[in-house]
Length: 123
Image (cartoon, rainbow, N blue to C red; front, side, top):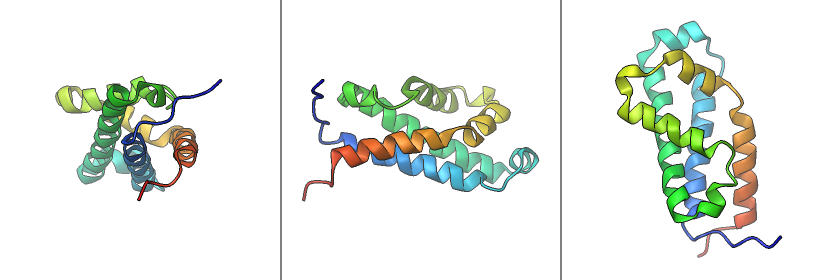
């Protein structure tokens, strides 16, 4: 099956997603749930990176829906962003923690593959 090529801005949006996801991984590395729950700065940093990831995917889904559809769980990424932005009073720290410490690595690998496919940025 022949795929349409990525829209010009798609790679930049994927890069934003990848960067935010890797930052989340770095922020929670070696931390326990108790440490996360007690550290408002850590929680805020993780939440901010989820917001960035979700916003990048929201824009990508509008600008290049074919590429967005190739990102695993794109609807959940956008949904997390929406909850963090609009439902901030109802945020479950445990849900954010579980997502941050869950299987983000598979998302990193999928986005890495898409960026390799996209090739280097145009000069």
